[in-house]
Length: 428
Ligand code: ACO
Image (cartoon, rainbow, N blue to C red):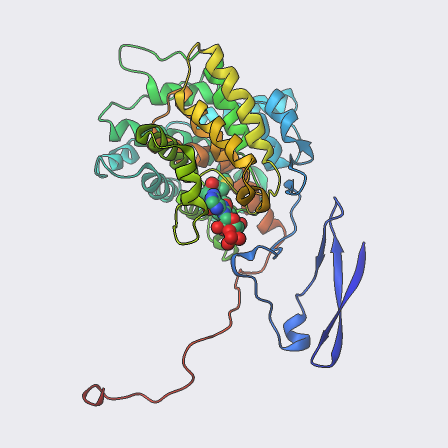
C-alpha cells in the first residue's frame, strides 16, 4: 500500500511516497530526495533510517515483540531446536522431517576443519581474544574452501556454504578455547546434536567424554535460539554493508564478528558479568552503581540495560530470566550474581532515570548467568553470541543479494575547513 507525505522546503512542496510494511509500520521513501531537493537527511547511528526491505525478523520495540519469519520468539524458545530455527531463518519456513534430517547431516558433514587450518591456532598467543581468533579464522576457512568465494544466494552451492559456515563456526570457536587453554582438540562427533557436539568439542578430554545433562543441552539450545537473528542491529548491518560491495559471505560475517565484539553490542554479555562480579566484590550498595550510571559526567553505564529498539522489556530477557532460575534449580545450584542481577533490575524499575529513558534489561543481562551455569568461560561469551547469530547474518547476506541491493554508501555533511592554499613547510 502506498500513500504519500508532503515536504515543504525553501518555499517548494515535494511529495514523498510512504511505504507500509506487513505489520503496518510506515516509512517515508527519500530515495529521490537529493535529486529532487539537493538535500540529504541526517541520522547519525541510523536510529530512524530504514536500510533495506526484509522478510526475516520482525521487532516491535514499543510492545516488546520479536518474531522470526512470523513465529513468536516465545513459541520458538519453548519448542524449537537451534537447527530448526537456523533452517527457518535461512529458508523462510520450518523444515519438515526430511529437510531437517538433510540439513542436520550437512551440518555434521562440515564440522571437521582441515588439518592445516588446525595449525593456525597455535600461531595465536595464549592471551588472544577468542573474538579476534574467530574473525580471523572465518576468513581463513574460506582460503581452504576457495569455491565458497564465488557462491551466490541460491542453489546447492549456497546450501552447502551456509551449512559449512554454521558448522565451522562451532568447531573454530571450540578450538580457539582449547588452544588458548593448552588442551588438545576434540574432533566433532557426527552422532551428537548441534549443541551437544559443541559441548563435546569444548569440554571432552582424551580419557573422559563430556556428556552434558539434558538441562545443559536445553539451556544452550535456548541461548542460541534467542540470539539467532535480530533484524538490522549493528553487526547484521555491518554484514550487509560489507556484503553490499559483493564481498563473499565469509568476509562479510567475519566483519559481523568484529562489530559484535564491542561492549555496546554483543560484548555486553561478558561486561554484565564483570559488572555484577564487581558489585559483589566491592560490597558497595547498588545505589553507588546507579548513581554512577546516572551521572552525566561519568561514562559508566549499567551493562545489559537499554536498547536502541526496545522501549519496553526485551522479550528475550524475559524468557531468559524465567529459564535461568529453572536451570539453576534443575542443576541444583545457585548463583549469587543472579540475586544481585534481580535486585539491580528491581532498583532500576523504581528509578526515574531508568523509567523515563525506557531502560530495561536487554538480552545480555541474563544471558551471562545462563552461560555461567552451562560452564562457558567468560571470554567465550561473545563468541557464543556469534555462533547463535550466524543464521541471521547468513540470511541477511542472502537477502541482500536476492534484492540486488545497491552498494551501501551513506552521505555526510562536511564541517571541516573551506578551501585554502598549501603552505610550504618553511613558512608554517
Ligand atoms: N546505563 C545508563 N544510562 C543509559 C544506559 C545504560 N545502560 N543506556 C542508555 N542510557 C542513557 C543515555 O545516557 C541517554 O541518556 P540522555 O538521554 O540523558 O543522554 C539515554 O539513556 C539514551 O541512550 P542512548 O545511548 O542514546 O541509546 P542508544 O540507543 O544510542 O544506545 C545502547 C543503546 C548502546 C544499548 C545503550 O543503551 C547502552 O550502552 N547499553 C549498555 C550496553 C548494552 O547492554 N549493550 C547491549 C545491547 S543489546 C545487544 O546489542 C545485543
